[in-house]
Length: 141
Image (cartoon, rainbow, N blue to C red):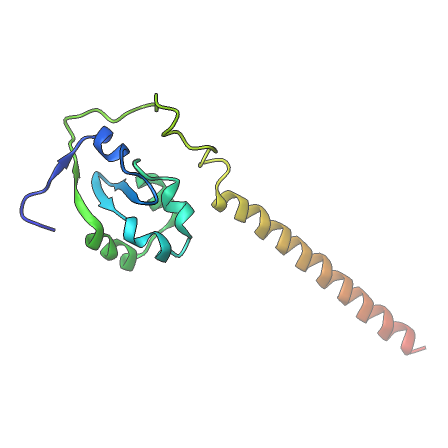
């Protein structure tokens, strides 16, 4: 990071909300992650869902490790001006996401899929165990 940080308003950052120009805010720092979209382990949709917004909570919720935090330095472009109030709602519907990222995200869908997978493995395991037990019981008589 340079000696002097460039300051941005929330509205300036919100203008960078596409796959051609994708900025996000994490812990009051602004990052241009456009070049990282194709390399993000969670896919570009994760970053594009937060494009032009404060993604601090989502970044922390995922539990990024020290390597990811160090990688942020490469994309750093400045800071959000703390004197400017953070927007509470988006008035321009063109900037609003098509889905509710919090409640219909790949992360929440994955939890459901993991649950179904675990349930399937358990049912299958119980079925195999029962089958093995039943066949060994009948073969001994």
